[in-house]
Amino acid sequence: MAHITRDGVERVVALARLSLSEPELGRMADELEAILSYVETLSRLDTEGVPPTSHVLPLATPLREDRALPPLDPDLAVANAPEHEGSAFVVPKVIEGEEEG
Image 1 (cartoon, rainbow, N blue to C red):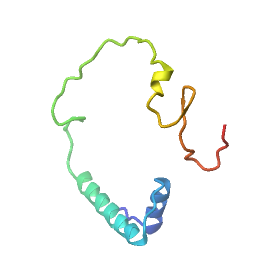
Image 2: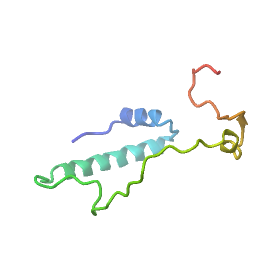
Image 3: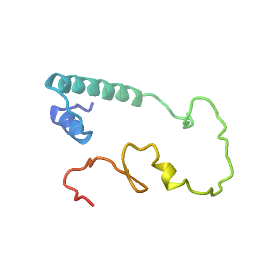
Image 4: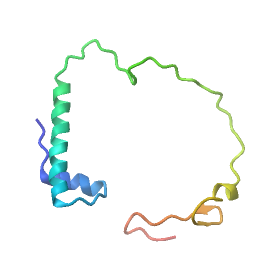
């Protein structure tokens, strides 16, 4: 069985850009361990002859004609934006180390 180490939890937390306290890190490790244990239990099931499905019920996928439409007016697109420059949305920088502009 795969075991979740504290280092593994800290790596996932860092990749997800989360900030967890010490008790939360411990709880997260326990929860991830329980999830992996359940997945291991499921992997032992015999699924031979069971067709793959994406939904438990057969559903028809309605299709429509794929056709080009006129683009949205740029001024209308940013009309409700909290901040914009011309036709561009202004958002805070989220990746450290990237240069502006």
